[in-house]
Length: 313
View 1 (cartoon, rainbow, N blue to C red):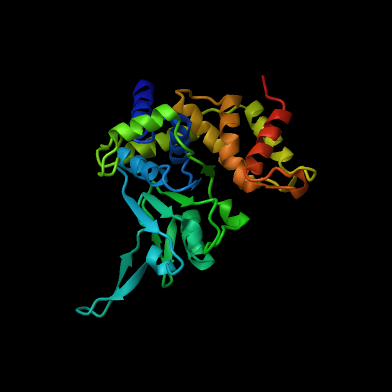
View 2 (cartoon, rainbow, N blue to C red):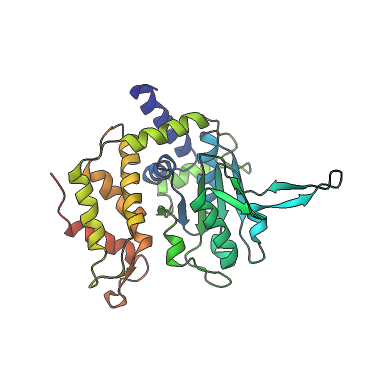
């Protein structure tokens, strides 16, 4: 694939998704960056702002297989992973795969399931395989989980602990649309799902190729040192009770490379790191309670870190 064709494919992907996610270009870019960096993404937002639509649009635009799992308190690990069933005619057990065996999996309201069920999903995310009755089954690639949760609802929920949140490379909030975008939504909305008219603009094979290109985006030592300085600052005990792990540092590097590719570059600049720092790092830290930053305090703390760390020239 030629560089010009590469840029064109990514631009088509942006336009396609932006057709249903109105007025949120940075959100769309971040979602594409998650896909290109082989990352899983958590969307934490109120109902009705387009979490499911974003997942559908990403899958349909890329010709990737898609499954949605509605998480509830009675959902079992086998409902996600699949089960072995007895074939009456042969007497053999046959594996019946669950919805995790798709390229893009929407884990809707993940915090409504029990910790045991959450763990089954997160183990599959980490290993890209599912183990049923002692046999491991590979999940098709590319593989991306998009999980959602409502940050304002606590009754009947099981919040993800820090070690499980760390499995998501990126966390975003879509937020409410601006007035102009919401007017456009109102004027074009129909009872039919908005993603039904989306056609693929890129093949599964091209997604895999773009993921490989993303890994090859050049990142100079000065940018690596910049990432390390940011990560080190998140471990400052005066500000944080819990800092970013090495996994988080790797995720920030990969996300910055993906963003550079989306912007048509074969090299990273500090701005790529700065733009991806909040979605990649904020959910991985715990801010000291005496700082009284309140809801969204983790994001504010990461922005303070970015202000305090010298940007390479």
